[in-house]
Image (cartoon, rainbow, N blue to C red; front, side, top):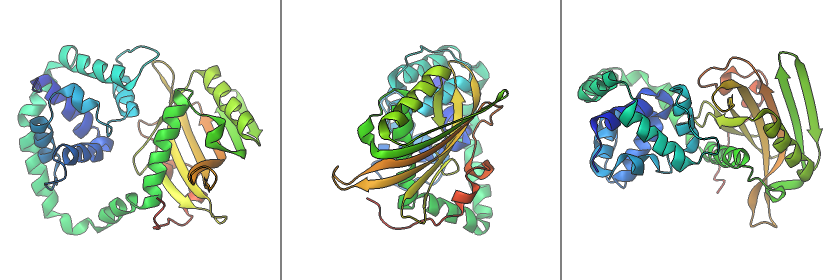
Length: 305
């Protein structure tokens, strides 16, 4: 079934109006066109997606649209959904929202959205000679160490939220330093083996009913090399309960390859800070006091595959 006008407006709201999702929009367009054309603007991306995707649910179930993206979108719209949700459940709930509850005025966005985007593209072209720094940032986000960091963070928090992490995912002597800061004080916990580390992580999530929603853009997840040769994954995001955003988290993972486990990356160290306070919609590493020093470490350009 083709996209309805409401669904088109919804896709624009999710992937174009939510600025942090624009890279996902462009990636989806390249996927549906099998990389045979250049996708330089969101207007082109939307046209390719609407033309070459069977229906809205097929689009939302694409790998590039993560469960975290759908969760965050529904939460921002204050749309309730079942407690034991899956990505499929969230995708269906988004489509239901677009087709039944999405404000009528949003439909107008698609009617003039493409024309406005063409105008914006023209304006951007006029100032393209001043975009060297943003281009460099975009290139840095594609360095192997940053790609690894985003892939690891998506995998880790997806499995953590579903209680799927196993001791085998960590080095036997893996260390955890956990700090929980709330209005009534600060708690600190430490562990020095994989089993106790995993028990502490799961007990904490169970106690507070947290859902971890990482900011999987370059501003929220980056990789670094520490002086001991560990790959550091620096990540931040928001903490949610069933319907509320209740705080933020900041963390640093130290990763090492295990030659006895098909040379896979395993976690050696975790520093995790949880703060129950008003959270920005999209926290970034640059705003973190605890991770500032780590951000000054080298950014490797070596192939880590």
